[in-house]
Length: 287
Image (cartoon, rainbow, N blue to C red; front, side):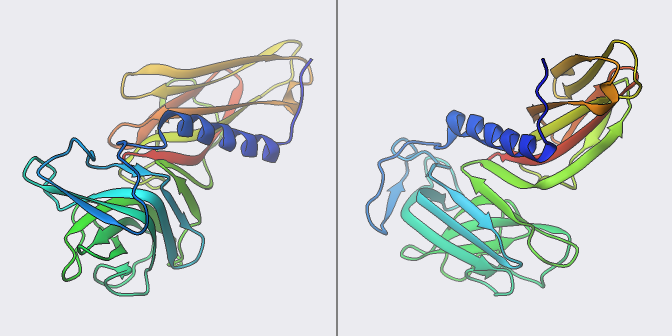
């Protein structure tokens, strides 16, 4: 017996399951002693006590046309020299925000706001004060005077109207508005799907929801949708579902997390007489 659920209900459940799976895997990177109060600790010449890139309970939210907020129990910032001779700075109880309409500290690092662009979200520190910064650069933002320590914590996307796309990030997992990248696709051989316009350069895995629908009503029918990991060329997920003579009225929903290559590309294929639709609902960031 098949149970039918609405598409909107399934997408909501799939997003929750994908986020939950990722959170169980790695919500905290680099365990260090949790700081108490709004404190900042410098660890000079070592990465043992507080690994570079450490964070706990990191949340990044853009839910306004020009605002992004960042909170965390702690973040480990660096001075740009992540080695034995560099310094790491652990800052606790982080709660900062940035407006892209502001220049410098808690705003844009330089230049005019642009449409249809990705902006890296940074947390910065000058030794006593922790602030936020937006930059087109994911590696070398223009730092305000006196600020030395920094850490990229995520991204925001400016749409074609220069308004931030609503996104929520917990740890390294980002959920974004639903984007269809294949609508009733019929490719029966491995076909590239390019996510470079949908996820940022540091995305290493994409969270997907797929639907497969039979193209013709026959006595017995099988639908298939395969997601292919292009890093290895192996099938990452393959799902098959058999239907009956009323098969044009049902679909098979799947959810999957697929690795991306450096070009942010993966592949898909469907079975003969099938149609496949794939949505991107978020990604995993390589923080």
